[in-house]
Amino acid sequence: MARSTLQIATLIAGLALVSGGSAEGLVHYEITGDGIANSLTGAAGDAARGRELVLARTTTCILCHSGPFPETRFQGDLAPDLTGAGNRWTVSQLRLRMVDASRFNPGTIMPSYYRDDGLVRVGRNFVGKPILSAAEIEDIVAYLATLRD
Amino acid sequence: MNFWRAIVLAALAATAPRLFAGEIPPDARRSGYSFMSPGTRAMQDDDSSNPGMLFVLDGEALWTKKAGSANKACADCHGDARSSMKGVAARYPAFDKALARPVTLDQRINLCRANHQQAAPLPYESRDILALSAFVAHQSRGVAITAGDDPQLNSFVEQGRRLFMQREGQLNLACTNCHDDNFDKRLAGSPITQAQPTGYPIYRLEWQTLGSLERRLRSCMTGVRAQAYEYGAPELVALELYLMSRARGMLMETPAVRP
Image (tube, rainbow over the protein chains, first blue to last red):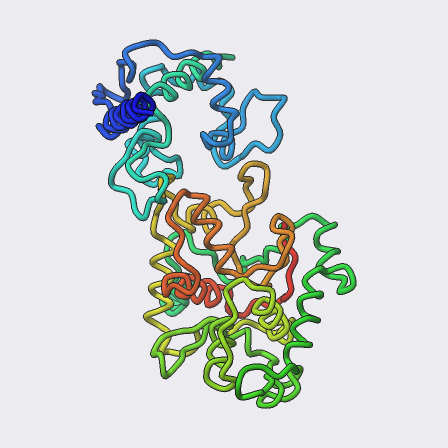
């Protein structure tokens, strides 16, 4: 009994540590020229995982974009086809476009995927969170870079 | 000749109703109906296959049913809805003098229940409120929308327009980004409409039931990951009023069917 109480207390302390970590906010990044040269995580992304993320509707990518995804129905046409994205943009440019596309065009409808402030009436479950994590952005950037004609 | 023509054109441009950037000119407005597949249009067009008509029939029964401690039915004051309610929904939300603000048709029905029937309000999106409002709005089918004509509503229409233009939520999108600037394109394969609220309450196939414009607005807000306003919130009423005034002159379709 005493042991299980202790275990629960340890578990709660552990959870508090985890949530404290995520409340620290976004990792710092530096914009150079028209891009972000360095990986947000310090590591290269996983392109295969990036493809899965692009196709997952929760990331919102294919609600607006279409691309070379013949197996997937219901793609959007509000935004450019992602085919050839790796020819059009460097990795550094892709990273900044994911992080904050409004830097290139303040009127863009593309959300800033790595931003947690300056937003209005954010839903309770999303307050203080970016749309994508740093690791997810790196995976997607790694995948988009492979989309070369 | 060209000089005078230029002056005439300039004068016409100056006196035409002012459109903000991105807003849809009156003659380019289209009902959500025009974005639908032939099958869904046919479902709306045929009263015997339009599922919204079941709610209209329920509403017709409620219209003559006595309610509340006053033991009065809608019909006891308003008589035959086919004449007394014709055109009424086309001018809602309407200004309420006692409250000094606009109220939706649903809110008007509940004000009537409180003040004249001494009955409890019907909950938002309950079958009975939807049935009554569908029945009342159905009497305006084919009637041109006039909402927002009352000058007392001007500041509320303006509030609704500001909300329509305001980016919000984690996805940081405004209504106007899709419904003024990108209608007819496809979001996840589905056509984006102009958000002309001509047929509410609508039978939405995705919902498998009838629903109000407020429900539709709340689900768009949730879609952009914004905190949806509560039913009856002044912001939702203002948005509804702006949308109805934006559709002024378009014909009511209640009960519309939408995907």
